[in-house]
Image (cartoon, rainbow, N blue to C red; front, side, top):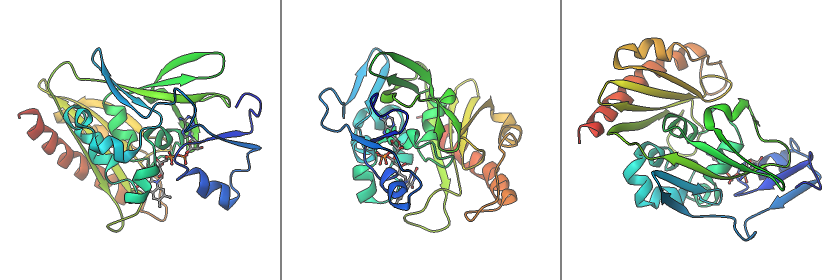
Length: 252
Ligand SMILES: Cc1cc2nc3c(=O)[nH]c(=O)nc-3n(C[C@H](O)[C@H](O)[C@H](O)COP(=O)(O)OP(=O)(O)OC[C@H]3O[C@@H](n4cnc5c(N)ncnc54)[C@H](O)[C@@H]3O)c2cc1C
């Protein structure tokens, strides 16, 4: 990657990259398939209050993992609606965030749980909170020769309820018109993140009493998937639904 930087792309599942290569939108000098590099992890490991999800972990792996199911049900809900079975068998969690779509389904649940991105290059390593990783549609804080090695998800130290919601134009394979994830703790503190509601997935903090103010921070646009007013209105509806489910999970 260093040799070909800045005109190089890493290939993980290829479910985004191949589409862009075929359409001609990306014309890199090199595509690097890392799947057989030793040390490239497709493991989900629990250590010292953190779940570490290797960059090779697919949506299918994630949905089937009992540790993720126990600690991060909203992430399981999001991963289980990405594309189709075939897409989920290839699509990685890391690829979903590196693609930096404003509508990426796993971004909201990762943002509300405080995910940290572990970044590596040939000469350095660094860690970045996910809310600093997204810069613009399709643009991340990764330098051209850097890659995402894994994601760290801090396991909540206190009881937390979480959930995920999304609206699509049809059932089945479609990208979100809007999506949303929230966490709620016993003190009534709410963390909420929205997708397809701003140029990047957006994280906001508030309380159960401030849902309207929180969703008003979104800046949706009108496009083929939905109008600005519709998106803005549905965010509040989805926020109420998501909070209700999170409240039920908190009290379990
Ligand atoms: C039919 C179809 C339906 C889809 N439905 C959904 C959906 O419902 N919801 C949704 O969110 N997405 C959806 N997607 C998009 C896509 O499947 C996801 O974004 C997927 O998670 C991408 O992961 P990947 O492993 O395939 O990434 P790739 O296609 O391999 O890579 C995506 C981008 O990220 C870069 N990249 C990948 N991994 C790394 C890494 N570890 N370090 C640095 N850069 C990296 C690549 O260079 C590339 O630019 C859909 C795609 C298709 C084709």
